Image (cartoon, rainbow over all chains, first blue to last red; front, top):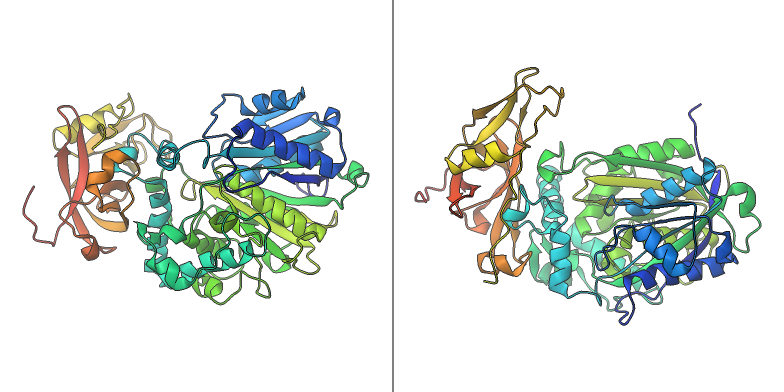
Length: 391
Length: 141
């Protein structure tokens, strides 16, 4: 029997700031305010927090972000780190927090992430900041827009499996429908497949409405051991599985553009939890672009390789479908403040498992998956969450 | 235009590669230990970790593995270039590399299309490798 943290740690608090356009606040505030709300949700005073993990900020690039956030909150943790695996930081941070608690490095860990890419920098600067994440020798001189790395994978998926732009566009339409059920979502106006197809091209096959938002926002979680979890006011949500995969740094070094490390990270998470994709009631899947979700529903095991296009087009990722996904509206319509974006998927799955997703609740949801990814599928992390200590 | 485009900050791993390109030669690293061929310049073989690598000229030919035509520039310096097509080229020798196409209208670009390297001298010191469709019949640069 492999060593495992499955069922040993629970999420006992979740908090969010307002999202979308939220001017007049700093990147640190988005971290700290979300943490304040999460602590209130857990009914916990900040003096009990002995660990803090966060991700990086584009607007406020502190060398020690987690330490700066702790200072802002007036806490002095004895376990802290800033994780940096781009989009995958979200799910990865929950795994790291759970491991730290299970190993006895900390008892109460705050995982938070916030940034204000919409109000804290111009759109051009935000795009440029993202470009700076690409390789300065092999990629940047060629005008590689970050979305272009993902566009290259989508183009290849269309070529290998006959996936269509219409099928991918349905992901954007579904996410918008979900956002319309979610109070505070950044985008509320309904859109159609034709709207997506007719929006301005960005980097083919992606047009503006195939691409995620630029937002302000912060989100935080409080985690502690399963033994202590029942002392808290809200129903605990247990970490049942966690897996990661890092397959390459450069897109030109990727072995495949259409089968990704998500297959490895999810297999590890499923195995740790003792479950499979058919057991999942709800999912959060990193939807930085429409086609990303198409590839992910395949690699996460919700449908066979190559069938992601028809799967998303047939309503399988919405209410009543096989796996309701991003019921808050995702990065495409709820918000995408950069690195924090994927953390909102976790918050939504926690709410679904608590039965708190009013107006969009997946009835009886007991098991949920969250998958985060980044860097043109360079980084992948999956977690399995559940309402019981054993799946 | 608003300022120069980003130039590669050449380092000890990549100097020979960039100097080769500037002379009009695409140099791939061949591992004398295990035979692995790599585009990604390293002082060791990415497969066997051996340090005995030889730079050998490549044919400069390959096929388009994937592509994306960029309409929204990543920064103002690229504004006058759009639309331009970013390509992942699978070289005849095996590894892939990232570049942009020249002499190829966006609507004509296809996965699997044969391409040939073009050496684009962008400054006195730097030459960027670009690719041109082989069958397009376009005039030489």
